[in-house]
Length: 634
Ligand code: PRX
Image (tube, rainbow, N blue to C red):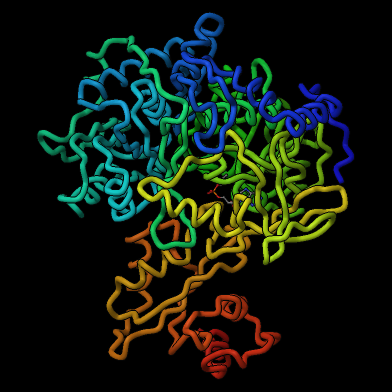
């Protein structure tokens, strides 16, 4: 248990926090009605929640007005966004006034390209200010943004463009990554060429991040910057119903295809503002740095919406933790006097390896709150981050949540909830986790089970784009009466939650969700592969690494490993590259033909015994065969 007293003054005392928790439990309708007043509504909602219509259903508002316009009276000259370029000498600061202007200009450009409220606009950009500006510009005119992670392969981009029905894409000529250049525009061109009849993209706006030239297709591709110069600096905001989709974000699940999670406007924004203020103890003058790419939900909720809704200052860093040297992130914290630093256990593990003397060279005394997200953090990584980066002075929030939850659900609240290293601790006021046994019965007290949530919360996703039935099947039907998170958890005698990881077939690589089926579907496109199974095993740096078993067809070529790897990186992306590919004669299957992943995991981890009863397998001998293949010297 962390005993070091925090020298900081936090917003919330334990007593005030308890009062919030009690109020949220006793009078949810009143509580959320109160929280909805964080936002400026054009039409005030008459009700907080109704099962049929969702959150703040008859309210109307505009997201960009809430992030920008309403702060102009008091914060016009305050920094809203500080962009630190890869080049240490290059910093761009956008005040609320100038950010407002940039957002309006881009919103006008979108309108001039024919984008209307409800249209989908894809954003495929590196970490440059235009990403955040583009998101807010979409919301200004009621368009739905679909941010695509820069690490996606052309095929992954194409699938998402087709599924979302995007009419316009905002991309960059290239992205900078250390000395390297990432070919954003070329990847997008390849994606658009893949299914020319299936996609609906009419225009591509190209941000020039560098002066690198790229090929531009007449009638489709336009450089953005001249259009922005000519656009008016004001743009009338579109009034949107609270339940209108604000954005789609694709994420992986147990089923093969990534699904477009749809977040609504009013509920999501209330949740982003509420959780950002509570969990990060948001205070006047804070500099908030979230290291997540805007291609992921963390980048949406805490890299953009939460801090801006609360009138904060966002820091966006273009570069990597290790370029040009291993202290780069610490340098950024020191130079910009970051107060709130939100990152991933994967990044912490990598930075830990650089040694304590690197971090000690920098003045990190501006930090007040440290946060992690995306995967379980080990006790060792927690302590290192707390002691060496936070100097034992900071609040530490290990935040559990997911794309579908919109924002943080289980987390310490600085000053109010006592931390325990590596525990996400307690649900936020208004969140009601339960641990269920396999039959769906809630388990009381200190126990372990499947983590579900009772009741709704404002940030909950509305549905899955194009597949409302899949939303029901995935989240609401597995345990009737509860929302199924896909995670397992343990609850200790103090009621604290310890997330144990996914209970479904989702693999968490460096905090990135990848479905086993997504990888297996990619492998199925390689003709030489008869069948395959992908599983996750513990990995020192990435949290989990992917191991793939492939069963070749009879006439399999010698380069099957290479072909399998290529199928995965080209269909999914490089971030899904497996650690090991094992070519095997068959998979352990039940008599009904289902691969037994539990055994595949154990064998991949190098275990040679303790497999339990194998008599239910169609061919029990296969286990020994796989062990001998995996143990054989390579
Ligand atoms: O398994 C949990 C893990 O990440 C999953 C959600 O992934 P994604 O939708 O990509 O969102 C990541 C950022 C919110 C969860 O189902 N996860 C997230 N936070 C934690 C975590 N596992 C353990 N501890 C956490 N703090």
